[in-house]
Structures are given as C-alpha cells and as structure tokens.
Image (cartoon, helix red, strand yellow):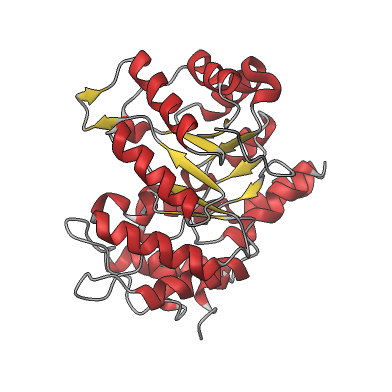
Length: 310
C-alpha cells in the first residue's frame, strides 16, 4: 500500500494521553475530552493515545474502540494523533491499525509481539509482523522499543525495518542506554530514520538529544515545560536547553521513579481537568505522602495541568 508521507517529519513533544475513569472505574469520556483540550493547551506537537501510560492493558476491546473514536473526533485535526495498536496477534494488530487509519490517526505506534516474559516471536516472526502492518495501512508506523516487552530489538533489525519498509521511519527508544542505541540506529539507518524519539517521561532527554533524537514522548504532566528544552536544543541553543532541563528534571525524575502513570492523573484531578485520578485495579493509587510531594514539586514549577480547570 502506498505510504501517505507527511510534508515534514514529525518531531517535537508527543505526550501520552491518560485515560480518565469514574470512581466506579467506568470510562469518563467527558474527562477524556478535557484531557485532550488541556494537552493541546500545553502546546504539544501531537498526542499519543491508547499507550501503556493510557492503561491500554486494562481496557476492553470495546472501550479501546470507543476511546479511539472519541479522541479522534474531539482532537479534530488540531494536532497529529498517534494511536497505539499493539497486540500479540498479527491479525488483531492489523485490524487495529486499519481502524486507526480509517478514523484519521496520523501514525500508529507498535511494540513487538509479546505476551508475558516467555511468549515472544522469533526475529523472523517480528519482521513479518511489522511487514504485515506496513502492507495493511498507508500511514507511518512508530516502533516502540521498551523493556516492558522483554523483546530484544537489535539496531541491525530496526535499521533493516526502516530501510526495507519506508512507512517504518519512527522509533521510540526507551531502553537502558537509550542514547547509545539512538546514536547507533541513526548511523545504521541513515535517512531512513525519519523520527528518532525517546520516552520514559523524557528522563534521559539531554543525552538522547545529543545522540540525535528529534522527538520525545513523555507523559502529559509537564509537556509545556519539556517542549522548550527540545526546541531550544534543535535550534542550537544547547546551553539554554540544558538550563531549562535542569530546572524540571527533579519533577521528571520523581514522576519516573516514584509515580509512574499515576502522576498525570493526580495533577489533572488537582487542576480540575478530570474528576478522579483513579487507576484501574489491580493498579493502586499513590501513597498520600508521595502524592503530596508530587504536587509540591509540580506547584513549584507552575505546571499547567494544576490550574487548567480551575
């Protein structure tokens, strides 16, 4: 299938949209719309939906479908949207990818197939998995290389995907030593690597930018403060970028090491974006002291999520 190429490569800050729930753990669709509006007001370059930080592993298939349509209809082209379509089954992943393209997603993001720590595909199986996705849709594909899968995606394998399948030009690298892998991937893939991104709440952003990253995929806790770092760096203002990053790094570190996906929900509830910061069981809420420490750091930086809905 011919690829629908964007006029310019996607770059910048593409945070993960959290999935808000009501107190009974049902979907809060009005809250989801407010989340998207808040994120757009955070001056993001795009939004990623249905990702791991969206609690995608706690959603039913019907809820995924509902959220996909709700998000695409509400964003309505204001920013690009990346839809995560990961699943162990090639058939299911292809169906999800086609659905995402049909409702207007600009890109899909995919982890390699895995199910727990012991059920994985061979390298040949991984290659044909991505090959099937590329044949099924015309929008770009981002490969998510994350420890959660337990799948080792070598630089040679990733560069081979990019060289042989033009749709696969975007990579979210969030493994230990991400900067080194980004650097090696860019060297191995050359012009085929259109969008080297990092993740993990942007906790290694400066090193990853030094390695050649042009995008980052954090949470929606403080993207309006992360974006100037990236844009200053890409514009050559590396000292200003480093100074700005040093100011926000303690909060990024606290989120990454102490809170995980609960941080954004906590801040957004405090700021009136959503009614509840509940996460679906068996996930547990933040400890009250951790919550207080998170909010104190976020307030000191005046993050938008804390005041957006007040």
